[in-house]
Structures are given as structure tokens and as C-alpha cells.
Image (cartoon, rainbow, N blue to C red; front, side, top):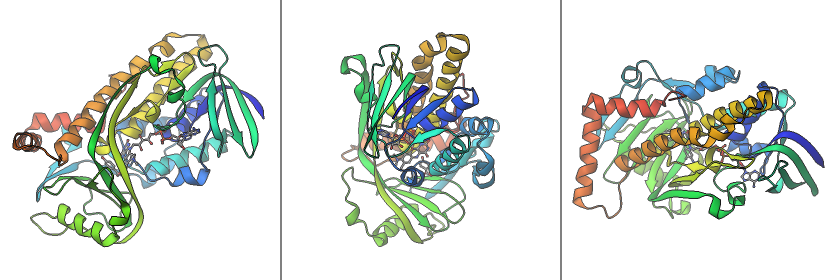
Length: 394
Ligand code: RFL
Ligand code: PHB
């Protein structure tokens, strides 16, 4: 199979799929090449929090019919220190902004349905994808699918293939600078058919380690526990997970955790990572392919949305008006938002987790920061402004 398209996209996560749709709205054609099956990408449980700007982007792109019906609008979050919960009124602190809880896999399902309804090409189960000649005028993507060799000739390649993808790895090492930090803990996450502990997302700093209570609906809870980076899931039967959740989410008012059938269980490592620049000739990296944040700030999917918003506008200016300035500015424009999110995610992670081997000085600094965030309007306002997401163009 040999095909030609304007933009060849590697990866059908939120970044690749949304880019394909935004380009379609501008009359630009693309082909998405994805290693996994449709069922796999639609059922991968990941992020849950959409910033206002991401919701607006999905709405403007006509993708919000189900999001409006099923998304849960949250006007605040809770920070729990020991057994005491404090509410941060995001809406009041940010002059009216809110977040929406809607699973990443639901965003992905909506995007795939829309691309297929628009006759968009998504090549699932494409193995051994490789990218070629992106330093020249005629880049190519090759792959194998159903035992057949495939090749896509394109004007540009969008590397939307996540942290472990092939696109970033195809850039000569000397051309990329990596900044990263690995944290000495991970998250054990479950999805459970159970009533959430609260109507809002709760971030807990507990002497036994961090915990997070979130949800996907009024009947499905999403819960996380800080664990060891090399944690073995077999050591965590459901009963042990629930016991630990009861302990860490307990408040002065008592137990707040409702148990239910565990639908999914997994361990997620925590790291901060940025690869600069995000453009290499005619290759543009977007989303997790270029940067990772620890999930404590709920920024990963939102950054993926922001990147492809910038990229689709830049590609559109190129195809319509032969303008190259927006493509030239892509990396710098995105990196400004990315570094703010990197800082915020590192800040939330540092403030909320128990660091192994932390000395008394470090523990007291952390406690002081927590007390400051829940008692000072200025500190709460800064956290809230970052959490709901900074405006585009800022
Ligand atoms: P994805 O979603 O990883 O998609 C990349 C796609 O590329 C495919 N792929 C390949 N295809 C072809 N050839 C290859 N060689 C390929 N290699 C990979 C993959 O199969 C996949 O389909 O990247 P994208 O689109 O950049 O999206 C990024 C987000 O997925 C990620 O940042 C978020 O999930 C992070 N995240 C959160 N982000 C938020 O904004 N809010 C949250 O509340 C939030 N919570 C989270 C999170 C991530 C978590 N985990 C599991 C890492 C909570 C967790 C637990
Ligand atoms: C989630 O609902 O999965 C979630 C919420 C907040 C986070 C991370 C994940 O910071």
C-alpha cells in the first residue's frame, strides 16, 4: 500500500486524533498510523480532568455533544492534610473558571467516531512504524499492516506517538536536549463501580503517603495511592487497596470511602520530561512524545490538546497562505505553556507526596507550603489559576 497525504500522523491518542480532526476542519487531509487496535486505545484508562480551555477547544471543534451530557463540571477541589479537608473554590478564585471530569478514553472514543464519520483514515494495528527523510521536503512513514508493507508520503509528519513512540527516538541525539526528573514513587490506580468519596476531586497528603479520590461518573470512582516505583500489583489484592484507601481518605468526620467491584488496576510511574525543540525539519512532536508531567497536576492530556491546537493553526497557515512563521514558532509557543505546566505538576507532586528519606527540614517545608495554600488567598489563587489552566495565547 502506498498513499499520499498532507500530514502523516503517528499515534491515535488524544494528540494525534484531535490534530487529524482539526486539520480536517481546515480542509487539510491526514492519515493516522496507530500501533494498537481500536478497542485497545478506546479502553485505555488514563486522565480524567479537562481544563476549561480543552473543553472550549473540543466545543469549537464540534466534539462536545456527549461531553456536555456526561462530563461532570467541578467548581472546586479539596486538599486534605492528615484528616482535615480544605476546599479550594476554583470558580471563585479564578473569576469563573471550572474544570470538567470526563475520561480520556471517552474523549478518544468521541474523536475516533467523528473521524470515521468524516471518512478520516486511521490505520489501527500498524506495526513497526518508522519515519524517514523528515529533514528534507518529502518525509515518509513506513509500517507493516496485516502482513503488508505500507508507505505514506506526506508534506509533514506529526509525532503524536506518546512517550515510548518512535518519532522522538528517530531524531539524532545531538539535535535534542532532554530535561527530566524521575520521582521515587508511583501511583497505584483503580477504577471501581463505587460511589465516589466526595463530589469533588480530593488530593490527600497523609503520613502513609499520597492518595487521590476522583471519579468518572456518580457511580464509578477513580482512586489512586502513592506506592513504590517498582510496586508489584500481585501484592495488592483488592482488600489491601481498600484498607489503605480507607486509612488515607479518613477525615475527622469518619470513613469516606465506598467500596465496589474493582474494574481496572494499574501502576503508573511518575516523571517530568521535556525534549526540546519540538520541531525537527518537517517533523513536529506533540503531546507525550515531547513531554511528560507527573499526573498530580492533571495536565498531560490538556497539554496534548494545547500542542495540536497550535500545530493545526500553523499547518493551516502554511497550506493556505504558504506562511512559515507559525511553523517556525511552534516549538517556542508550545514550550512556554509546557514549562508552566511542568512547574505546576512538579509543585503539586512535591507538596503532596511522602518522599522516602526526607529529613525533618524537608518535611516541615512541605507542611508549611500545604498550610500556606489552604490559608492564604494569594497562594490558593495561584494554585487555582494553574489548575484550571492558563488562557491560550498567554
Ligand atoms: P498517548 O495517549 O500516549 O497516545 C500515543 C499513541 O501512539 C501510539 N503509538 C504508536 N503508534 C504507531 N507506532 C508506534 N511506534 C507507536 N508508539 C505509540 C500509542 O499506542 C498511543 O495510541 O499520547 P498523547 O496523545 O500525547 O496524549 C497524552 C495523554 O495520554 C497523557 O498526557 C495523559 O493521559 C496524562 N494524564 C493526565 N492528563 C491530564 O490532562 N489530566 C489528568 O487527569 C491525567 N491523569 C494521566 C493521568 C496519565 C496517567 N497515566 C496512566 C500515565 C493519570 C494517569 C494515571
Ligand atoms: C483522574 O481522575 O484520573 C485524575 C484526576 C486528577 C489528577 C490525576 C488523575 O490529578
